[in-house]
Length: 194
Image (cartoon, rainbow, N blue to C red):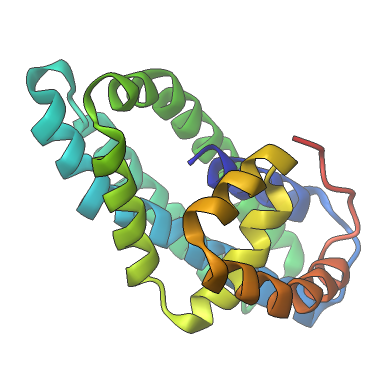
């Protein structure tokens, strides 16, 4: 989860601040990123939150985070609508999404991550990750796999590759170059290092 959080925030910030890139590529990359953010929150609400509630019981109240997801969806919808218009308006909407998402992620990592570590067995958490991977279609994975791997530290990437197996390695090998070309065409700002 830390890798996807880093990737979402890093790319939102770069897209909101960047003044370079090709219009069509910016819109394509942003569309894929917004889809990732939507899927991430949907997967938390549908899969991870129920598991946490079952295992942690009274130790956790996830209502605030679910409410945040609803508020974030409103901004996501505004960002999606802005894709068809002026890039300055899109950047403004992406900046608003970044600000709200940064606060949400900080709260999630400080409040929910310790609950997961304390109450959710590793096998159960892995089951959630497996279900999330099964929900992702091939089209989504063509972006997700190289995108996440590009934001992972070498140690994180090794762990991801170990857990995901040969299918993930093959997909990464086949999609990395295409992803890198789209990223370069979309975002001129350098990537902050994890």
